[in-house]
Image (cartoon, rainbow, N blue to C red):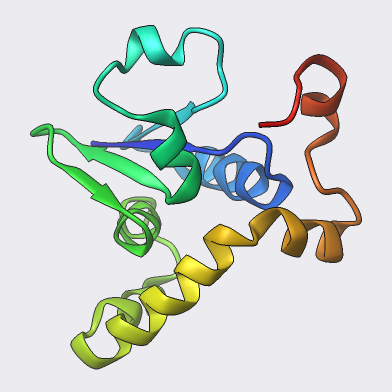
Length: 130
C-alpha cells in the first residue's frame, strides 16, 4: 500500500493521479489531495507546504518517501510503465532527481504551457491559490 499526497491544484498532477486511480485494480494506492479541507486533521504528520514543494508518499509501514521514489513506486504498484524504474538506477537517479526537482518547482508554469491552464478548473472555482 502506498499513500500519495499530491497537489490537486496542478492539472498535470491531478491527471496523473486520475490515471493511476483508474489503473489501480488491486487497490494498492490511496490518493490524498493536500488541499482538501480535512487534510491537516487526517494527516497531521505530513506538512502540506513541504508536500506541495515535493511529492510525498507513505508506505504501509509508515515510512515517508518523496519525489520520484513515489512516482516510480506508484507506477510499479499498478503494474504499468515498468521502464520508469530505470530512473532509480544509481547514475540515472541523480540526474532524474534533479530534473524532477526542477519540474516540481515549476510544475504550474509547465502545466500552464502544456495544458493552457495553470490550475485545474475545479480548483479555481472554489479554492484560492497558495
